[in-house]
Length: 494
Ligand code: ADP
Ligand code: GLC
Image (cartoon, rainbow, N blue to C red; front, side, top):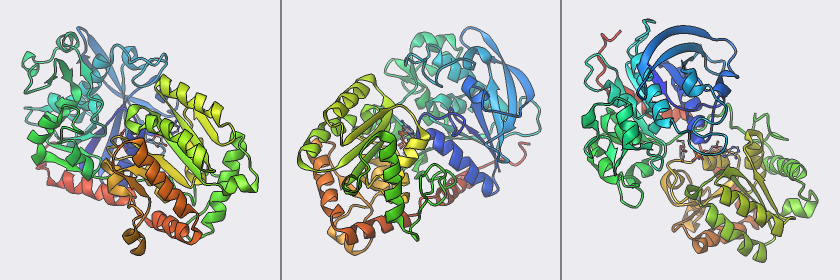
């Protein structure tokens, strides 16, 4: 089975969040199971700087915004694996400083509609082997709005591959105005509420949802939630209309990158079978030393609450900001925060650190290494997300013996088992839930956790149950393979 993976991020080449992690772990797991998978990404400047050996394997023209682009296809290997990596090289769209979606000043690139429309057209062409390489796809697996147009470009072409569209986050709908739509040369009839028009904009996400043969999202609960007005971001009606082809598959962990036993970024490795208490303590000490927090015995014995993530409304940062003063007033603990995102959160968190310099560390920025160290060092991990399609940090936390405190939503609800009396008795509890995204409920869950932290025997039981969970891609990739197998693939495509 030949599967072309199309996405806008893939760790370790380019990553802004969990999408990058998934477009690393999942293709690798599929490749290990014998799927003939290839990965296609835009040839961003920062990514090209990381690629060592490459070869130009084809050129073709693609329509852009009132102009035509020459696309060069570059081939390399993904992350030292056998997986072919194809790069869509259009220098006027991707060879620039800045992020994949944002200018260095933090604003969206003004030509994002053209950038990802051209990328999607190129992917569609490539999937049908426009460059005569001898490889065409049976299935194109597209991810998020940046690739939403691929299924639209493939519709009604008899020899086209099947398409799967995975929603990683419904909050990002890939919206652009009518002027952009008109400039990109789409069939005029696409501008209709039945097709890709969405409240007076075009939505590339909606294109993916409507035109793909199958739609998946990254947890079973989120698959249900997005069909409701509360979590549907206005798209719930559209999603209800495609319920027959909508399925939720929980993301996995890539244990090559995230495993406390072998993680090279840690001060000390540990596992469920070795002394994880001492291992976590050594990492806490190393983290505190780096952050300038006290490393004396009493400081290290206090509970440490960690947060790593994008500083956006989704993640409930406002709840964390409200929680901190209450916690600091009533408890003796430390909190470590790493993140970047909306400026007002960055400023408020930094100011908050000024009030509690001994017990609160806030680092504004992006650091893979520090994220790993926080996962290993913390006792509790905060994820008060208002909504969370899957969430990877709670999975990493479980694996690192760091108990997550989560708002009961999406993948957080699907992966963390609340420490109720019954779940503790049956040795299933792995973390703490709260059910309404407000500070009182959040505070209640944290208090519950802090109380249990005092009971070392119980705490170790919770850690061991958490660390014994298996959220590897091994299982989730099987679900994708079953889905691929369920598609009616014509065998004479190649
Ligand atoms: P989302 O994709 O919504 O951002 P996930 O929990 O699925 O949330 O994945 C977030 C990923 O991005 C994790 O690998 C997390 O460690 C990483 N991450 C987010 N912010 C930072 C940061 N400031 N520094 C390092 N890693 C980060
Ligand atoms: C999105 C979601 C996150 C998910 C990630 C990978 O960014 O916000 O919940 O884990 O994609 O699927």
